[in-house]
Image (cartoon, rainbow, N blue to C red; front, side, top):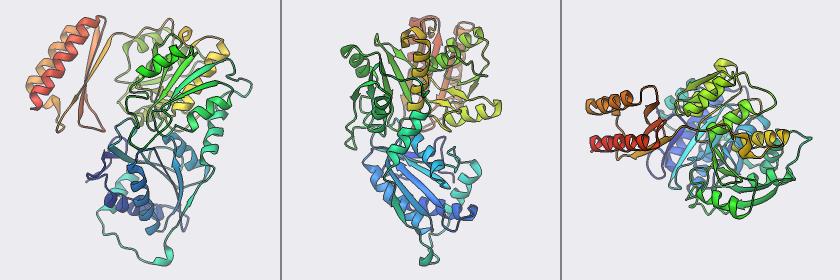
Length: 443
């Protein structure tokens, strides 16, 4: 049995596999695999988390399992997922582990791994951990137990790393920025990075209580950020998700600048044109057309930063991402990093001496409607003939003017119905019709 999904192991806390018992065994299994693969007698693992209350329990369980397997653990505390990736490399650890469910509600949680290079864990290592999980948890020699230490300067190390990706001869002293931290992992380091680069900062949702992560805030709920940018007469707004690997921007007029728009800026407005851009099947057709006009190659990957990263590696390119705000800049970081992505857009703003809305003035997304159909239990919509017929009718109706994408979420029991085209009213009606059809056939 494989416990790993497209982005680690995720689920509702208290239900398998996100339980203290499973986390203990997972830590032990990962530690055993690591010891077999490592040249070190006692390998080092860095362990970080977001601000969910359940993270403290999973942290203790994982820590105990890893120590029982003879592994040393460096505890980082609440930090963005990309910070754990960076510190895995910076601290010369053999493995990085993040406890987070990203943009999901507080009652969910997850566990994901980074290799010693700060990249997604290879499939063969995941499979080795799966196999080890089937074995009995047996401590062979108490003299070989590992121990844990807390890294006291983890925040400062990551802040300095983020700042290093912004040109040293630039600063943000002329900008007022509203930063929505989603009551998540970036609640401390997020505002600090931009403030230390000179910006005047208004911080929102930076008081996590363990239960308010992503609650009507952050990149998945940017409405209050839009209002705050207007209220504070700010130059822009920046919204993270719970573990700060996603970013959505807001211009001075309160308009959203999503992941597609960020890719457009980095591909066409920066001083150096990239070799190519990787988007996903969710990327708006307008991005594809704009990059074609700018003579920047563009390819689509499956949804998920793992697949964007794979495509970038295959092409030898460095910039890719998703409309949701997962942006990879591999010349700066090994994984999607919301703070660093925002800094790259700010770099373009400063070097071009343009406001955010000016950078996207010529970029107009095609009307796109996404309906998330939440289910009691996941099923394959393409295995239902009646649904396939409805999908084919919609595709025929949109032919040459738009597109349809039906996909299963990799992290929750949700089927995503996306319709894109040149007529908003038509697109909305089609999306709702197809979503209703999915619900009817799920009953």
